[in-house]
Picture (cartoon, rainbow, N blue to C red):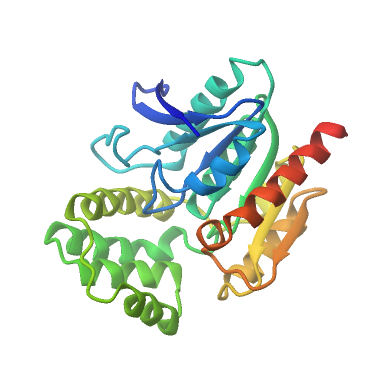
Length: 277
């Protein structure tokens, strides 16, 4: 399906590139750390059959602007609020807001701060355990490794933040084999990760704050994702009033890539139920 890239300007002048495709009720898909315009591509192609899908490249991820200095969730919330307002403008209809991983944490911040243009919220495994002073040393490790372009040390710091089990890391390394990452894409991702870690280190692990969210909410998780993610998502679902929790058997934190049709079908059903209510 044909897509078009647009520019949305945030409150502080940061320019965001947003990919748009399809027609119908508007949906904004927010990517996680290390991602970009491509992150939701397969899910978006499916949803675009009957929805207008907007996919921003977040602040710090090219081709959107990479502002100097550390990043905060307050800045990214302003960014996403601007994208949501832009997505609402063509039809006048409020937006279904969807986030995965870090993008899910950002979606929570945005729905909590200003939900006037948000029709519903769907979050897939936000890493709410990875925040605050506990990860500050890992941010320092990552920044040092980033400055000397040490991919191995950067990956080690990120594994400490995400708590990916050693066997999963080994499986990914085996699957990659001798393939060498594109250096331009690897650097773009590394820059984005650095800024995301800055925002996470300045955030809180307090889940109770999300009890203020009143829009219809869907919490999504994979049955095979490692702890502490399952405990975190169960707690989140119990905290948000009237939130629904769907756990996908046989899926993990990578479900948007491994099972895009399942993700799209689950979201479509949720959107339909909200629209019918």
